[in-house]
Image (tube, rainbow, N blue to C red):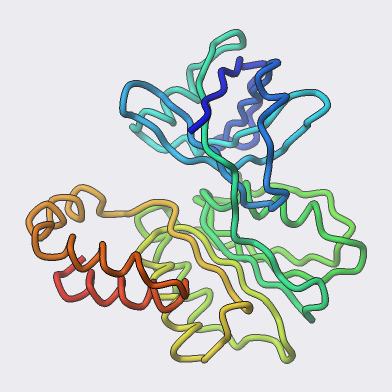
Length: 267
């Protein structure tokens, strides 16, 4: 995996709990993107300590990218983003990829997520073509965390207030309890992993949507320490089954099998 050394060019407070770090440098000249608004890169904060983050803005000519960080309490990435100054260096890697790829002819788009999804949502909204319709459900801590996006699209934003501990439940309610618009549309949902897993099952199995009608992404896990401890307890049992699942070529069938494996052992 190719690594690129980047320099912090500037930092910007987007909201009290969201900070943008602009990275630049000649190395980024060769850092190619996927063109998808939810593409991400891997940032190394130390030896064996990396995290994936959405590329909020890409400027190939200026050799810059923007990364937006949620400043939650604790965590190496949030601490770094809160305290870093221009001139600091950081290593990024990974071939940026994403999931957001609706058919341009869809009748509507529904984009939903918590604060961690706002960088991708913001980029997707700003890249909408003129007249394209989208409804956004954005779950943030409070009204001070609202953002504005410049767009040529026809966009409505529904702000929902919930602290991180309740963000997953708020995301579930926002999608599972919602009557979707008429016509063939597209949903993109990202945020807490357990919530997005439940939402994917609802869209696929309850509503029977085809795979091209939705994408869901788990960015973080509310009970990560408990989950990881439980995984260690059952790893010998489930790792061979997970390895076998890797041979499944249909993505949605793969996620069904993996979800079933995890559910059987309480993950």
